[in-house]
Each structure stands twice: as structure tokens, then as C-alpha cells.
Image (cartoon, rainbow, N blue to C red; front, side, top):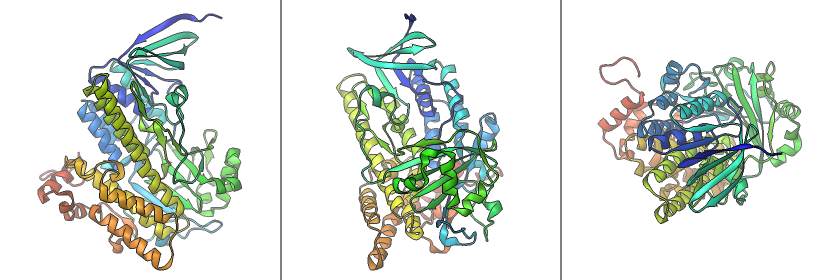
Length: 529
């Protein structure tokens, strides 16, 4: 049966995948004067996970908005501006990271601070981070990219990619018609095991340090708040549920992310050993089996119901052996996924968008671009390595809350230091995601992660904990080593002011940073912007 005549599209860059990263890259490239084709296999709105932002992710979104003159993007970088400017796009309030540590078949006592870790990311709601409700957020960005001039084609199945000279040719079908897209460069924004991984037959690398894990997740309605069922004593740095909530237990963890449309994203990542006991491929039945072992979590879901079918991911982690070639590149979200435990996906991907768009803007096809793409690949793989090492260390200590909490502070130290350095205009102080290109920190992180896998005891354990603290100290600008906080860490301007020397900044420069970021109101002003 013959198809209808071919639709032909010519562009400077073809982007496959119109999730948030593909659409952001398209908008930035359009501002660089490029003709962009944005290709989508499905149709928005569509279900997706990968939903929780962080201060560094929001700062990178601001940088993309400012660098490429896209002010409409900036409103999505804070809870307050998002609520005022785009109430039509559902979102969740994220004031920080909540970790609650469970034992199987035992309720968790609400007043047991030894089994809590609360790390605030903002001092108040106006500048808080967010959970992106991806069906509406991705749709909003895809529509914006199309409105700004991207040649957008959804419901398009690309069946092959070939090269003719310096041109990549993508051929497929859309609505029963053939479609042919030609461009000198292709960006893969389709996610793990996506378009280029299959089309180019790229090798998949098994995790080097992380245990094999499986995922089970969906969206729920009517999930009870933890702090309604288990009010904590004292004044936590933020309402416990207004966060990325992590219920950690031996062999895995459950995430809970609340949106302002009444839905909650919830799911579990578990090792293969635990998966053998609960059978995640069974969907809802497996979810029930897991909650039966976690009585306090089960109480939250007593009146809840899934609004979509459960998704079983036989393998959570993914790594591609290649990230780029002479005329193509994968965004980090397509090149590798480690685990959602530390919400690392957004900053890794947004760093990739910034780097790749800049690379395409300042180079032409040829040796210079090929060299730049090789560096892009090296950096992407190095940052995925650093992320995997730390997440693997946390998986190794899920049965040991004190050690898990202390290791997690390596992430919070690196993330907060990196954000402050970038806000001061000194990104060179914090090279690479998780300081992966900072020699002293990266070597120490690698060493700590390796030791964590041995779960040291006795004197070796105390020496290990001292080593973690020594690694954190030069980069601690958030009071993470203050034992009086008892694992509740607020965001305090005083911590940043006291750490000016670590950031090679003056007192006045830190005050300016605090004012610009909305942590404190500018002199003479009584409200936050």
C-alpha cells in the first residue's frame, strides 16, 4: 500500500523528543537564529515522571531564560512566580528534601529524629522549588517552542536515520503520510533507550557501582499528608510534605511528590533482591505487597487510588557508551539515567542543554565542532559517573540511617556550593555537576563512595565518618556540619554570610546574592519579588 506524498522539512537542527528538554533546546536554538524541527512520537499532554526540581536546576532554567532572552521561561523557576504567572500549569511546592527511614513491619515514630533528615532548599514559599506536573509543563513548553517558530510535528514515528554528506536524513510516517526531515545536526531528547540509542545501535553500559534496581510508579489521588498523620514535635524547617518525600527502607525507597491539582506522584525504586519478594511486574498488587511491609506509609495510602495504570521499569538505571558523534548528540537525559533519589536528572539535563546549544552556536561542522562534541561527551559521562558513585553509596547504607544521612550531605554541600558560586558569577569555583571536575572534592567523593560499599564498622566506621566531614567542610555553606541542628537544616542567610570566604566573596557580595535570589528583601523593600 502506497503512502501519501512525502512531507519534506529542511532545518538546521532536528530535535527528536518534545519533553521539556527538547523544547528548551529548540527555543534557545531559535534565538540563535537556527531553523529547528521538533519531532514528537506521541501527543501532549502525556504522562511522564522525572518531576522534582532543585535550586541548581531552577538557577540553570533562569540562566537559559536570560542568556537566550526567553523571559517567559523565568516564571517557572520559582513557586511564587509560577503561581502568579502560569496558574494554568499544575505544579507542586517543594521546600526541600524529606527523608524518613523505615524498618519493615514496624511503624515509624513521628518524634524519632534519628530516623529523619530534613534539608530545606528555600527559606519561604515565594522562592521555593517545584515539582513539575509533566503532562502540562511539557505541553506548555512544546507550544511555546512552536509559537516561536519551531517546525513541530507530533504523532511522528521516525523509522530510520541516514546520512548524505553532512546532512542527517530522518524518515518516517505521520498520520499515514511519509515524512522526511533533513538537517546537518540531530539532538536526541527522547530519554533513556531512546531514538538514537536504537537507530545507531549504541552500546548500553551496565551500572558500575549501583545495584540493579527496578521501578514501579504512577499518579495517585487522595494521598494523606504525613504531617497530618504524624505531626512532628518542634518546628521543622518547612512543612514535611511540602518537599520531595523519601521513605527509605532496606533495599529501596518510595518517593512522594504532591501537585496542586490534587494528584501525587508516587513510586518505588527497589533492588532486584527486594523486587523478587514483591514482584513489581504485578503492578498494583506489588504496590500493596510493599506497603503491607511499611505500616506508616500504608496509612498514607489508605484512602488513595491510582489514577493511571502502574508502570513497571525492569531497569531504572541506564547508561549509553556514546553521547555524541560528528553530527549528533544526546542530551544527558537520553545518555543516562541513574536514579531519582537525589533529583539529579533536571540539573544534569539543563547543564546539557546549555552546553550543547552554546556548542552549536559557536562552532561550524568540522574539526572544531567534533572536538567540542568529544568534550561534551566526556563531561556528560564524568558527571553521570559522579552521580552514580554517590547514589550507589546511599543504596549501600539504606539500612544504616546515620551513615546514609551523613553521606547525603556530600550531595547537599556540593549542590548548595555550586548554586552560590554560579549566582556570584564564579562558576569556575564549582566545576562540574556535584563538583565532579573539582579535583579535591571529586577524589574524596570517589573514596567515600568506595568505602561506603564496605559498610565499615567500629573504629573504621568512625574514621570514615570523620573523612566524610573533612570532605564536606571546605564546601559547607549551609551549616551541614552543625550537630545542634539534629538533622533539620533550614536555609539561613547567616550561614551563607559566614561562608563568604569559602566562596572567595565579600560580605557585600553575599548580601547582594541574598537580595537577588529573594532570600532577604532588598534594603528599603518589604516584599519579595
